[in-house]
Length: 451
View 1 (cartoon, rainbow, N blue to C red):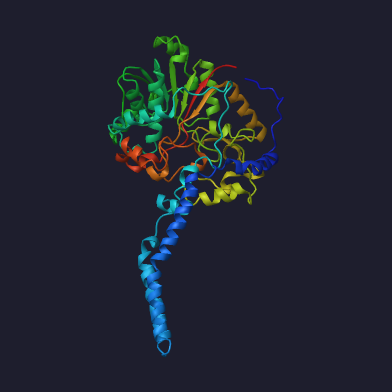
View 2: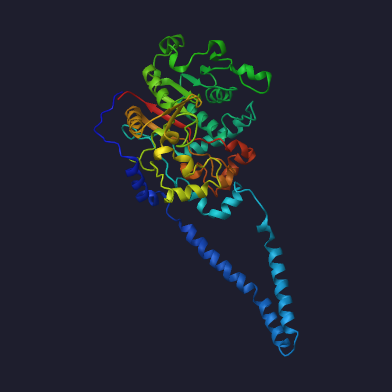
C-alpha cells in the first residue's frame, strides 16, 4: 500500500544524537531490593571484621610479648604468611575457572539483583499498531498455560530438535493456537515436523496445511520426525511457495469461508514484510513468525528489524564507538553468545538497519542493500497493516534456565522472573534440559487488516 511522504525520515546522524540523549532512559530504575542488599552487604562486611578481631588481638599480644627480643619481626612475618594462606584456602571456591557464558559468572559480574532489571536495558523496539490494540491474554494466562504445556512437551517425538524450535517458541505457538481456536492452521516451513506436532497438541481435530520443500517423512529414515494424518502437505514434488498458492481454491476445498478463522505460522526464513503483504492479499488476519530476528542478526528481514526506528521507543542506534551503547554492547558480548557489538551492528556509512544496511531474504541467499529512507518507509507500510503486535516473552530468566544465547538487554521481561525458583519448579520447568531454552528469537504474533 503506498505511503505518503508527509513524514520526513530522520537521518542516521540525527538518530545517533537522539540515542545518546535517551539511552539512559532505557535503563531500568534501581530496585529497593538493591538498596536493601547494599545495607546487607555493609552489615556482612562489618560482621566479618568483628569475626576476625580475636585473631588480630592475639597477634597484638604476641607482638607486645616479643617486642623486647630480636625474634618478634620473624614471628610477625610468620603469622602474616599463615593468615594469607588461610585466606586463600577459605576463598578458593571463588578462584575456580568458569566460562564467561556461565550464569554464575554473569551473576558475579552484574550482580544477582541486576538480572531482573537487565531485561530491555538496550531497548526493545515494538511495532506500532493502527489503533493501539493489544492481545486479550495476560501474564496469568501464560503461567497457567505453562503449567499445562510442560507435561505435553515432555512427550514430544523429536527430543533433540536441533536447528528447530526450542521450548519457548513451542509453548508460544501452542498457546496462541489454543487461545484462538482456529478452523484451519497453515504452516510455511515444517522441517522434521515438530511445529506440526505442536499445532496438533493445541487443536487435536483441526485440519493443518503444511508447506515445506522437503517432506518430513524423509527425515524418518535418519531419526525421529513427525507426519500428521490430518494434514495436507505441499511438500517434495508437490511443494508450492506460500505466495504462489491459489488460496481461494484451497479455502473452498477445506470449506473455509471466514478467513479470520485461519492461523498462519511462518518458519520459512523469508522476508517478513513480503510475507505480510502476501497474507494480506490472500485475506488472512492472524499470523505468527517464529524467527523475529533482532537488528544485526538473522538470515531474513524481520519485523523486529523493520520496526527498529529512531521514532519508536527503544529503537534506533548509534554507530559512534565511544557511545554508551557501544560500551554496553562490548561488555555484553562477553556474556551472551547472540549479543551484537557495534562493529557487528554497523556497516559501511554507519548503516545499522536490517543487517549492516542489508535486507536479507530466503535464508540469506538474497541480500539487498537498502537505504535508511527505504527502511523507514517499510516501517510505515507495516504500521498501516498492523492491528496487533505481540512478542512472546522468554519463558523464564537466565538465572533459572541457564540459557547463554539471547541477550536479555534486547528482550521483554520473562514470564517467570529471575529469583522465582519456586514457581519455576512448580511449573515443572526444572525437569527440562537447559538446552531447550536456548532457541529464543522474539517469536511474534500479528493481527493484520487493510488500512
